[in-house]
Amino acid sequence: MGPEPALPRRGTGHQVVVELLLHGPLTRGELGLALGLTPGSVTRAVRPLLDAGLVHELDVVLGPGLGRPVTPLDLVLDRDVVVGVKITAGRVWGVVAGLRAEVLHEASTELSSTDPAVVVDAVADIVRRLLSRCSDRAVHGVGVSVGGQVDDVGHVSVAPLLDWVDVDLGAALRQRLDLPVVVDNDVVSLVRAERWLGAARDLDRFALVTVGAGLGYALVVGGAILELPSSARSPIAHVPLGIGDGVCDEGHRGCASSVLALSAVLGRAARALGREGASLDELLAAHASGHPGATAVVEEAAEALGALLALVADLAWPRAIVVTGDGIGVGLAGRDVVDSAMRARRAADAEPVTVDLQATGFTRWARGAAVAAVEAFVVDR
Image (cartoon, rainbow, N blue to C red; front, side, top):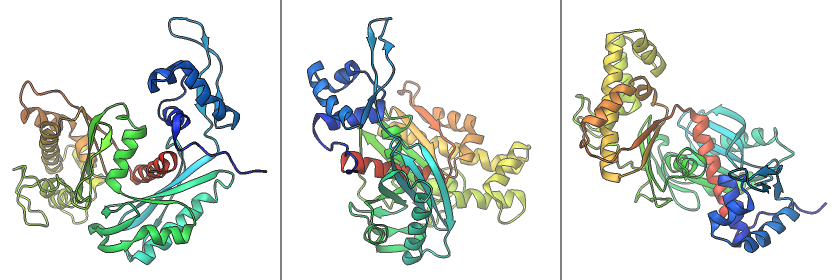
């Protein structure tokens, strides 16, 4: 048996593949409209993909307005997968995903330390475990996300939460895995997932804000992710909000991190609930039961989030802001406060901005890393 046919990486066939991946199933007419191609050009581009078994025809349907019958096309996606891995300070999370980022399998493993050699071992182990569950699939790469500054070949110059400086993670993983490896900043991976296959995929300008151990930010303009000078330092983490009397780890009073970072929220939760080590779930449960101290903590964080989103809306002019992260629970619990704080800080005639608060877990971060691998495979970035 010969090798599996490969997706085209350039030309009109490549354009068709990307359009079907992101927006399929589509008819030939819809492909022509989306790509600006004549019917003949679409036919010439599609025929080799059909012959190679990369694209297939679906059942005939009636066109718009009960018009003539048409045959939608879609990619054949049941054989191609990628792996996505998210590295945190205490655990490695992994998923196997299809080319539309549907999660097929997931797993995680605890880290005994953040020593780079230990982390590389853990990532290699979880990739092998995941791939053992889908041995009949074609594996096209591994995406790995990390909270730090990463270059195009996967060299991590700094990752503060892992206490890493100058770690060549990409090279170490390629040697261990014998697969294409993409290493990405974790927030950038999430925004790739939103831009390619998420709720914001049809928007040419949107922002992503993450709330958790740190505060992350990414901006898409004209369909392209704006590259920050340093992806290890969030541009929103220390903007002054003037809310609360907390002090962040860099000594700023009232900045975004001092009131919204998970450590700050949980520190106030411990005082409000009268016990050290209170978790976010415990804080939210106490708030839901009417505990006044817990409610004060949630509402202060929600007000800070609304103020931060107002700044993003006014300075970046996004059409939508996607907000997620492992600390998003305070925003979801205090959604009314988030909205009112945002409205209070914007002009009455300001352009409306859709705010999408998304509950998430680390599987979602790993899925974002998988999308980085999909993007690398499909467009050879």
